[in-house]
Image (cartoon, rainbow, N blue to C red; front, side, top):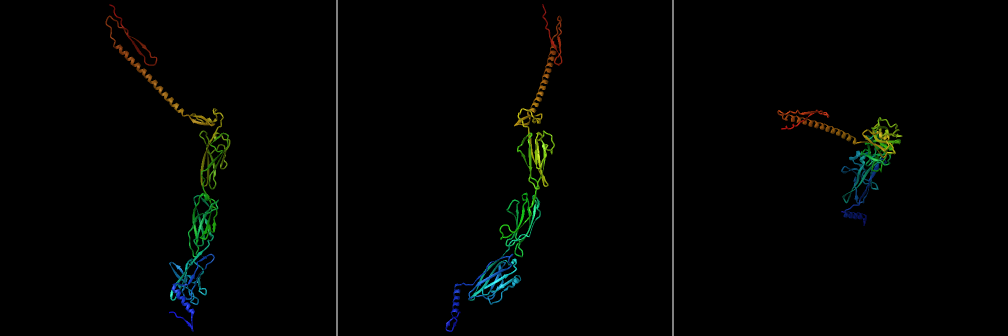
Length: 481
């Protein structure tokens, strides 16, 4: 129940206006108290203090009791009181007992004054000071309770610092072995990490090869200490490694330490042999230069050996009256006996590889019919043919055929001779047997007649066969009467 306060015969209009405003406010169901807070970003390398300021405005009819202005912090899932304030003239602000051991000796509380603000100052910040805070004011209008809130986020940042340690296990390595990379740095906040880069010898653009995870420490920055193994290849020779300290506030590569350049050792590849002049056949009297090369680290040593063709009797490892100079072999005024296979061998302490190249030396001729020393290479079963001025020894395939034909002809002739002789012998035997049989069957003459003895002539064989007798028979003349 509201009453008008009178002073004498006059009505107290100030009290009336206040009462009227109260009715209007209640009728609308709204209040006019406002408060404001701001987020706080603290660079830990420049500042170790957090100031949380809650400013508010209220009307006279909005009543705030003692200890109803509070700074709270989100802990786990709920806001807990940290500091409690009262209006000017009220009780002194204080830190709540529940967090006294955390904030007690690190805070300053400035109570509201004419500016109506509650200030919480936290010094010597620790990681747990980061988070979400809110200012809460509880007030009453006509005995009805209202609450107003405003949040403030505290964010810690820190610039990434240059690494204090970066080591590589060795700067001389064999191909496909691993190098150990160790780096330690304060990478700042938030989202700090260490990155390791590789910069090739002839490149200006670093290649990222490793990124670490975050590690939080009590000073709210990320201190990282990493060890990483990297497998090197021959293309890494001459490269250097770079360890950088990074966080979300860095653009590109952060503060860094750089290693020495590494050397990667490997055995030789298969050598490459170049001929000058570049051709496969050469004429007697020409000069030839053979150049051998092979990729390796350390550089290879080169040796040359020579294997002559089968037509010449040479000794391997003895070159054709020439001496090599390093990776080059110079053949001057070459002769036919320089034909053969030349071998370049590249070697270092890590391996040995070789490459063969064949050289064919021929005689330059003007008349293909003229016999030259080029045909002296040919054997008895080979024929010498010239093609484009070059002597070629070709095996004559008809020689074996001719020999076989002759042998077969001889065998056939002997067989025929034997058969003919055997036939003659058989015919002679048959004739002799027939003659003897005829003599035995002839009748003897009676008395008055004269037996005529058969005449036989002995015939000697002139052809080496046994002699046989030829039997002749004489007919009797008829008697006269």
